Amino acid sequence: MSAVIKQALFSPDEYLAMERQAECKSEYHEGQIFAMTGASRGHNLIVWNIGSELGRQLKSHPCEAYISDMRVKPATASNYFYPDVSVVCDQPAFEDTYTDTLLNPTVLMEVLSPSTEAYDRGAKFSHYRKIPSLKEYWLVAQDKPLIERFVRQSSDWVLTVFEGIEAVAASEAIGCSLALREVYDKVTFPAEPDLAEP
Image 1 (cartoon, rainbow, N blue to C red):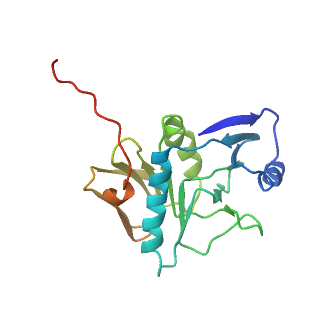
Image 2 (cartoon, rainbow, N blue to C red):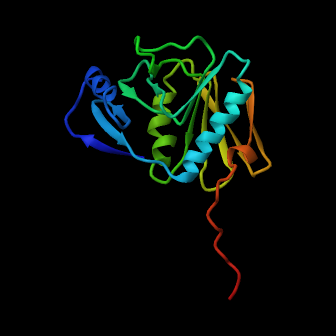
Image 3 (cartoon, rainbow, N blue to C red):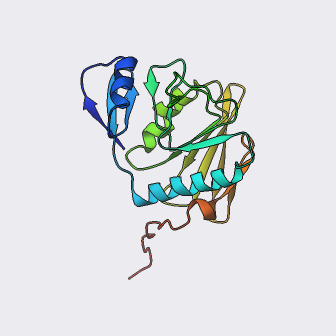
């Protein structure tokens, strides 16, 4: 979902100045700027469904949920990301007075796609783990009803898998539960190959 748009190295301040004027979102990784490309129908439906469910459940709750457009920055890294879903439960802390770069998310969620899955599981998760406030990281499949929830426990991250349309993924960190039937509402999965003998 991203492609390098500039080869020159930019400072974080230069990136933010350009990003706040840009018509399209870009992420920033150690001096390089990566344009965010469009997402598939399934990806958009899943993000919308999660945001809608969290919005409903957090209505009378101190936590706040944001989808896609809230930039997140690990405090100890010179990187800026746009998670698909961010939830913050403490008083939101922002990098500056623009209040568009969140520093203290409680939960981050990424919807996987073929072009970003390895990055979301690897380098991006490595950066996210540097955020002291982060308690959970969720990876949501697009091609089948499957959510992987990583929960911080001291210095380790413990994985729980929720699979199947009847499963319910729970978050202790924010006191919410997401029924996979709701997460994948209107999502069409790829057809399974027919392995039967001709």
